[in-house]
Image (cartoon, helix red, strand yellow):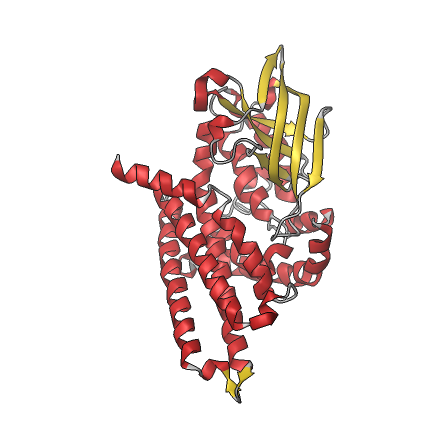
Length: 381
């Protein structure tokens, strides 16, 4: 396993729980959920009851008091279900940490216990039709009106938005201030003016619902401003990105490992010209090349995990991890699929699903083009 050298007994116990959940609750249902485009609500509640949501949250909020390594374990077990699994990571590793790290005592007390139990699903809404990686270009606004803020705008490509009870929304509170004019708000989805758009059809991760969201003068109390200070949104977003990008890299390396395991087993069984295709030198050379790529990235990601556990992983290192792992994931899965021939192009084949699911990892958590820009800028300054 990735990061196994850092695990303690509690992590191996957690792994058994996660594997059992994936095998019993997710794997038998993933085709049905892919067709639906979402995962039933009760699956989230079962995950919460099993301790799989927000597994690193403090005990004072009902969490298990775990650490980041529990997320490392869960990411690898969830990877076995591929895009037929719910987007627990978007809820637990991306959205909820904003409240834990930057929320007021009241905001934490209100939402973290519900996030841990699965009673509430939390989404994060940053991207807009005209603003992706360029967060300073967002147009969604939050205007102060007495004891409230009035939010107006549109978000797109929002994961977990179909069932979310709370959305953390990036808004402009002062358009003249650029990055310093961005603030984050906690928006409950039962508020007047909050509208869910159509469910978007993706080429991969089909069971993970993704929507457009519309905010038509949604009124929220001023107490829903995350951290109770305007202009901190951009810095709050950047603060969570280090872990988000590392976790994305872990998922990419996990997908590589699963693809290579499946491919190796396949070439041992598949015959051509009277013998297993694993016996051909070309097959062995190709597998050796792909396995070497996977192993190099695994070692790099484990180095990053060690630094992150110590609180020392830098933003540029996390960006490099996500960049390289996602690029290599695409190469490894594409070349692995080639061994399967026509079968590899059929959706019911796991390698085909992996191929489709992998593509978004070069886009999400900061597109790879933008990551190259950030890394290069840091190197030459």
